[in-house]
Image (cartoon, rainbow, N blue to C red; front, side, top):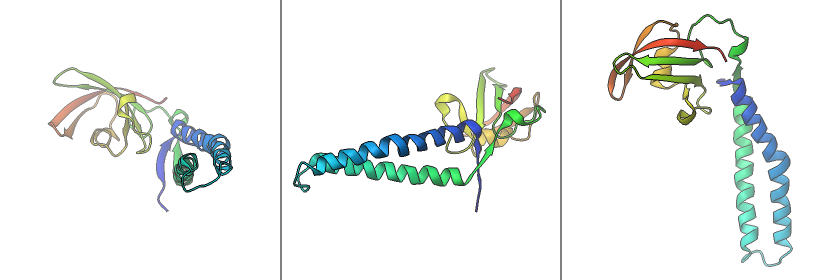
Length: 158
């Protein structure tokens, strides 16, 4: 069975969503279905069909999250020695050598990636180019715009 890397924060967020679905949403949906059934004819009962659709979505999401959590390899970088090396879970500040533009990214698992919050997937071209490098290194990364060189300014284990 293949294990998928996940940060501690990502694992906790998924676990919290799972608990919300199981303890709050599932009982609410079940109650809505029961109430809609009490209204009579189910063929033309829009409330019933909407509640059943919500139930299907919630149950599918529960299965999806349980699968992800069971295959997760949780990596907590706060407990690792701070060597300045870029590894999974670290936050890295890089500067484009040509434009002097600074960017900060956290390297996370595929399910946690969110570019709006500066979280990039371990499988992204930038992350793959940074993994294994250290603070002070200059790295060339092939992007859709071509080869771009970045200086690694800081690596934070947070």
